[in-house]
Image (tube, chains in turn brown, yellow):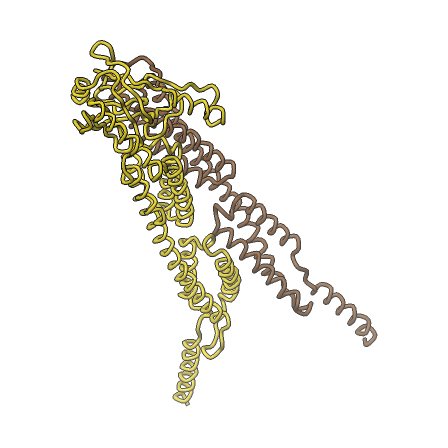
Length: 206
Length: 378
């Protein structure tokens, strides 16, 4: 009986130690980190800043939890909470990635639409300038031409902001161009209305 | 016996009730709700962008503590037991609360800063527009007024979106553009404030008047800055009328089509009555004269004027073809009744001196001084 006890006791202890030594959920942690990195790459830090901050918070909590368990005596380690956090970070990372990408696309679409409206507006202003008569009657429109040229050049700035993926700046710039273009069009129409009341004159050397 | 048993049971129940009543939850739910509310406030205040480090610290703590709150949810404790979790939550609540207060203050400050910048710039926009319009100098500024206007509009858009930081950035860019505009005006029109140049113009005008006196004849002096034409007879002022210039009239004429009105000593070369001009009546001038040609050739040689450019010509003092038109391409334009009065009094050979300004207090100098004075305000 004593012999049996002497044989089985170390074995039982070894089995207990081996099965009792919990390991950190490395793969889940890596998966969570990957999901967070992808969320960041999809623009989460800009378009879903608060969600992204929470993701980083979860990752920090996860690392702390793993650290806390790592320093415990092997038999008392429990990575259950770390696993939960890793799973939660991964799921949230994927959700935030999708959400950020969606918001970024929405911002891009809004900026592109504003750009198109601004382009059309500037084009119609340019068409109005082209309709203006040549010669002396055109004098009143000369100053306005500068404004239209400036509006045309400003459209490049909208494109630059779009290229930099700074959609809020692109959108506000495009809106400003559209508003100014409308104002310039009104000014040209008023000038043309004045010119229209007199007959166009021939071009003269000045 | 029965009484004793009942009594013991009552005492036991009383102790259990007291003990159970004394048990408290691990964390007060109100505290968790309050921290959640702080988190929402921080998000509303754009804390992730406005105070990224503080917000990251808050979130890290909050996620950690929330995890502990969730795992300790089923626990109860005795009132006399210490509760580290609650203490840490209270600390986080206080820290978060003070961040909210700080961000609120910062946002209010940014809002005030952005708003006052915008209001000042919008006022400046109105001022510069009216001043530039008054001296007919819009074309001098090229594309800058539009750039300035667009930046102010952009700053206003960001302000309305409560993005005060970007609103301030756009307002600052607008401010730089405004300074550039003032610099362009000063560079291009600075001669209107130049004492030497003004003395030169005054001398030219005096000599013209003197010529009229000596020759007992008529002579005309035009001041571009004040847009006034004065007719002298026998050295005395006979009449004075307002004039309109070319669309770029305030500048010195350099080449054909620049819309500028030339400065110099000219003579009336021909009188064109009704049927001979499309502009009611006209007095043709001898622009370009020898001095203009010399200046033009010199400018071409030095590269200030492109070699393909021509000097231009057919500068006149004339009436108005279309009453609604405000400008000419470089001539001096008078209202028709004034033109008629002038036409009757002038003959070919009459000297016409066109100068930039006759006093240091001319309209261009005053407009520039006003713009310069208020330059620092933005």
